[in-house]
Image 1 (cartoon, one colour):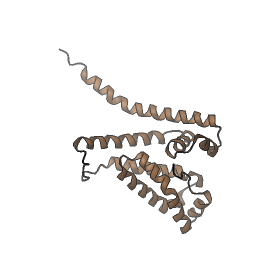
Image 2: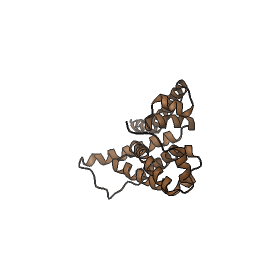
Image 3: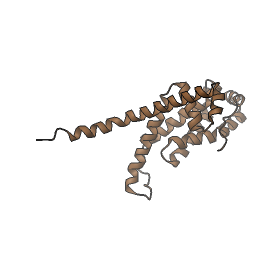
Image 4: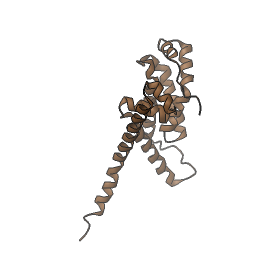
Length: 192
């Protein structure tokens, strides 16, 4: 697995103060993680690449707005998530369909909706669960590394991760249940 570390706090602080070299190093150092976020959230590789680039542009322009240097990962995750959601909402009518043809357009739309639902479910988690889930499942850190980084015991980290995964699964099930209930209602009441 590639390098999953974020740039050091001193680099983030220097970038926040307007140091151009620090900003440049911060953007290039954040790129692998931002790209990984985008690939896990966006429906297509093209959207992921565009979302990653847009997020890095926002990082470059607005690093001074980041309140705490330790919040870079969650800030970038929100930017990427929002960009992926925006792209999912604005399906391009002029985009050519892939060679795999007619039915895949529906599949692409469903994948985009699902990615948005997952991102929304993750964003709705309490901060301590969201941090563990992002570090472990999105950034790919080992359980031991996540526990150490957050100052938790391994057991506490595993507990938070389990609660976060369960909450995301419940949220996703809740969004899919109304559709199955509607189909059931249509089949009733048609008897003579």
